[in-house]
Length: 186
Image 1 (tube, rainbow, N blue to C red):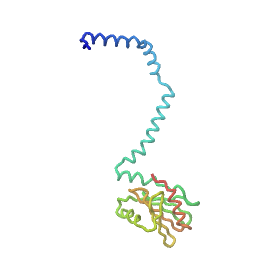
Image 2 (cartoon, helix red, strand yellow):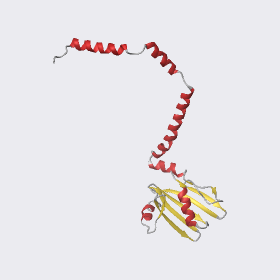
Image 3 (tube, rainbow, N blue to C red):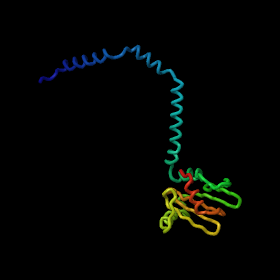
Image 4 (cartoon, rainbow, N blue to C red):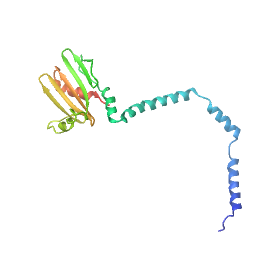
């Protein structure tokens, strides 16, 4: 087998490139098609706007989850909501980490705390050690009842403690479990 000389290799390359060039479409035709595509289309604009809305809508929750922990907790506190309440309860004024509903003398209060807060940091360990645990969406919880007040405390995730306090609500235990199961927590 013989090796190609530089001149032979160059001739073969030129021949191959000439063949490729002969199969190329007319340049005028290509320019015309590109000019047609460059014109804005209302449908294309609508699709672009819709795609931008979807990206923003998906990015906001992701951005909140990516905030440093202390900022993320501040963002999470406000949107906690009860998805279900007994008939007749209306929301009253609440604080930064509290939601309050009343119906006559009966009261339901939902509070959220961070496990990094001194008073609430030991709840995870204490609840985990209980002999009779309750599960709320697969997470351990504690239910206590004293006189006319019942308290359900649970950890929806590793960083938060939710506490549901029912005062003057009949059948407090099943009511607390139903409310807690319907709580919307990000």
